[in-house]
Image (cartoon, rainbow, N blue to C red; front, side):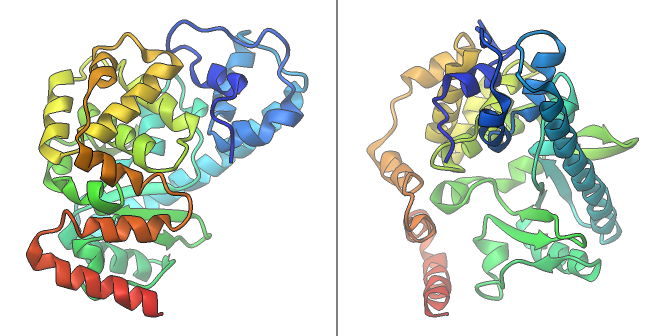
Length: 333
């Protein structure tokens, strides 16, 4: 696990966000390459070196690492374009999430944002059709469905391996567990925005929904968030059209104010401290119930099981038996 409190990593993640103190000494790249890559910051460090913001002791090694990261990104973007064609041909609704969308929408240069998979959002009622269409096109499921209707009703996402074994995650919602099932996914398909990739417009989320997703991912995605994802969030706060009040209103509607606040606090910690949403986040008082739900996302051991059983607390009574049976079936296999 990378130490996300490392001053070097935080300096790279916060570059261009707020008051910034770049490394005084040349960065020892051989010693930091693994952690910089894990935190999705290779492109940012390369840009810092190119603009004279810092030095590294082995610029050639950094350049090779950056070229490797961008080669992977291009491979994944090609997969994205192919998957979009398949979903369009099947007449399904979809939106691009995270990596490539944010690289082209909020980063000063897409080459500053690396990513290791593609995330697409589809409607819950269409997720089986989407998976089937992509499977016919050559993808394969990483895991079998827990029950005939589990993915459509309860799952966060379905992981597929594309033709060249790259990873494609088909999302039904934005987070696993109880907070994910609180989200009104219809909101994610309202007012679609676009970005252009290889000359093709691709549908994605509004700035407000991207910000909510980014905060939720930082707060709930990993026990320790990757600093590249925190940087995404901080950059999203600079989008001129962002409606702060709409962000808070939707988070309240979803019951996701605590994840929003935690994500925004992390963005504040790397330089976005003065943004009004970060000010709100610093003083947000979470409920005892939400803190109990949050605890299951902080577990390093047995995390999936804890989240799964905590989900029963937020499900309607009519859905609890089916969900519990699916979990028991998983436990018996």
